Amino acid sequence: MRSDKNDLLPFFDLQQPSFNQKATLATSHFFSQLKALITPNFSIIHSRANESKILLGTITEKELSNLLNELSPNALIISCNEVQSGSAAIVTQVNWRDAGIEHYHFPHNREDNTTSLHRRTIEKMRQAWQDKRTIYIHGDSDPSQSNVIAVLFHCLVITPNAKPDAVLKTIQKSHSIRLSLREWEIISNVIASYTQLPILNESEETAKLEALSQSLAFKAFCQYAYTHPRSFDACRTVLIKFQENTSSILSKLSQPDEIKLEGTPLDDALDKIKEDPKGKELLDNLVQFLKNGNDPLYEKAVAAYQSLNHILLASHSANIPVSDTVRNLQASVILADATSEQKISQLNRITAFLTNPLANKTAFWNDAQAGLDSNNKTLNNVGKSLAALGCVLALFTAVITIGSGGSLLAPAIIIALALELTAIAIGFLLIKSCKNQDVTHYSESLCLELTSI
Image (cartoon, rainbow, N blue to C red; front, top):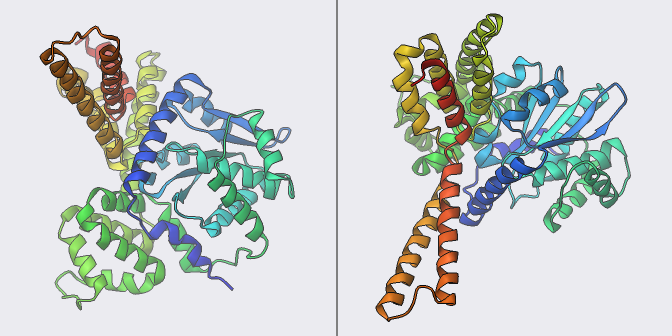
């Protein structure tokens, strides 16, 4: 008999991604952005007459309103993202909850074949499907796992006992997807074990842990771990203890700060995190959520989202066309590859600007120019490295050619310089893609419309 609590271990057992994983994630994210520019981003891959649908694909701000219309009300969204990118890639939950949509993050790791979490996710989707709810499966950073979940759901729920390759062909009629050998292996493992180890009745502790894993408080803490390498091991130790014995660690964290801890590995980890005021704040947020269900970060997000919505409604009532630009800007912030805290701050800046455009135009314009940095540091670093390498090689080629009396117009030199300039161009494109350009574009448009700066 397995423990249902162990299904949640992939949420809490943080793993430092290898350089190859980071590079793969960064590249996948970049090409997903390019693909979104030229192909439909989400498709209906299955539907029941006048009842519910299965949607698959990615989200862009241009299609967010259409997507909300397809999903509202009472739909279920399954977000398939890497554990380390979950906080950044997941759409701000306020937006979904405001539309009456349930959101569930399915974390995955390319080195992990954890079938228990796949089964758990499929079970959640099966219940929603029985309740005639529409389901949307998406993965912003890498579509591979959303494709796996889509095939599994068809094989196990929609058309039980169907062959996975036949299901794949059916889905491909409405949405372009591919599966690697490893993804076929995951599908085979999940199907083979699906009926052998049924989901048990959940304990109260498991229900709390799952709710915690879906909270903004949890995602912010994970994000802190991945952006603060020196505290990563400490954060991982604390999260594993949360999963192993929630009540015990809650009791320890509820002690006043002046009480000296015992010096165990957990105590050392807690001391390490609390050295940074930000780390301590995020740790306190986890405790609050487990004790009373309060998510301070979510509450801040609600306030920022609703304040901007009030202004949008007022401008719409007054037939002010600028509300379209604001709505696009709001969607681009919500979908930005940034932390929830960055998104909340950006929404508050937009609200402050709209409240008094003339007084705040300079600060708002400067913020627009600075851009909203992507959370994907690997993509940014790869871009910088590629651009720098291209510049060095191009300069080296030119100096050596001229120094040896050769011609820059020689075919071999032209080809070499072309490749080096291509590397520079791709590098700058990667860097630019890390700035969430849609946020900058709509911010500048809004500023120009309201102030003619």
